Image (tube, rainbow, N blue to C red; front, side, top):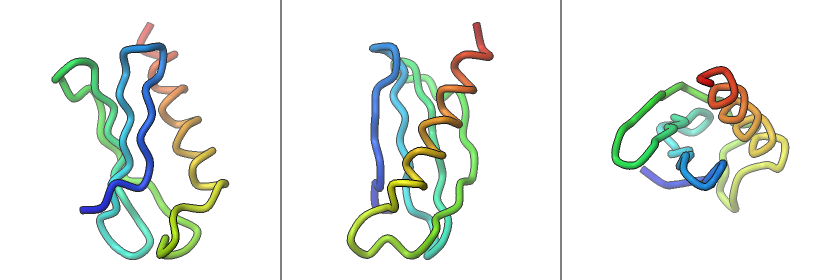
Length: 71
């Protein structure tokens, strides 16, 4: 699996999108070594040269919404 996007939110939540198929991947949100959430995410196109900025914005918002609603 190829990592398409990775970010750390609030200094402690690691968010990773890994490509599973041509047009979808899995967003994983972790805190430390613990997986908090995994969800399937779509892609605008097959990311041969990297993901589309609109996909990154969507993934980022999904992660932010999840983390904000945990509190």
